[in-house]
Amino acid sequence: MNRFGYAILYICLSLVALFQIFPILWLFLFSLKDNREIFSGSPFALPSELKWENYQKVWEGGIGVYFFNSIWITGLAIVLTVLLASMATFAITRMNWKLNTFVLGLFMVGLMIPIHSALIPLFSMFLSVNLIDHPLSIVITYTAYNLPITMMILLGFYYTLPREIEEAAIIDGSSIHRLFFQIILPMTTPIMSTTVIINMIYNWNEFVFVNTFISSDKYKTLTVGIQNFIGQYMTDWGAIGATLIISVLPILLAFIFFSNKVVEGISSSAVKG
Image 1 (cartoon, helix red, strand yellow):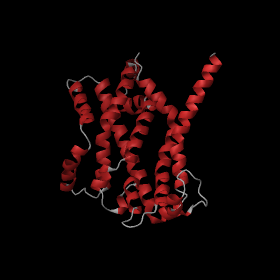
Image 2 (cartoon, rainbow, N blue to C red; image 1 turned 45 degrees about the vertical axis):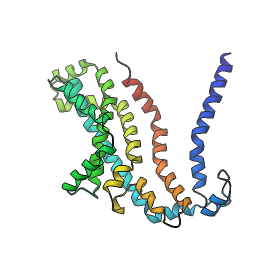
Image 3 (cartoon, rainbow, N blue to C red; image 1 turned 60 degrees about the horizontal axis):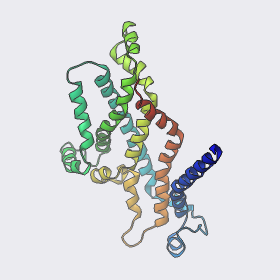
Image 4 (cartoon, rainbow, N blue to C red; image 1 turned 45 degrees about the horizontal axis):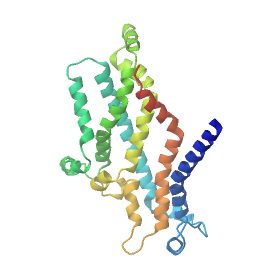
């Protein structure tokens, strides 16, 4: 009975995995077709001829610039968010001061602010300091919006850290800065991996802020740059499919390689003891 139960479980999980993988496989085949084949044949049919030139076309059409913009903007925002969130969480959970609970509440209020309600105030603020059509406006916005959720994930893990480690470090003459950067921060690597993946997914796929604050092609990211392949009278759908595959691939690879870290970080932050 146990073997039969495991067999049924694996069959169900395999079907779920197939259901999840199928859209990516379909999109990949879609990216290797031209408009004639996309609209005249079955949407599930294999391409009669592999149109690899679709990838060359979008790369030469400027997708490389959008791709590298997405990489460095996403990476910089992740570093700032995780570092600032770790420092703030350390100060709130491991240091005794009067307003730590109040400050934590202020950060958590950020979880209740809808993105669209802040677009006009943020646009007005960035316009007044000449940051419209500047990538710094995107980095600042991503960092600010991701701080609350990143801190909320880190909180549970920081509460489980034994204080004896900190006390031993202080007795040995360690400063607060050295305690944080050389002892506490390396201990939080599993949960930091989780926050990095979550921030990466949000930053990489974000559309509204980039579309609102950035107008120059040299600063656009992948999500907004895809619009350049949609024409008024003619749209190259194969090229759009190739662009989508290029945009999905980094997130997919990151999750494949770091999925164990994500699970480990979530489970470790959920256990107090």
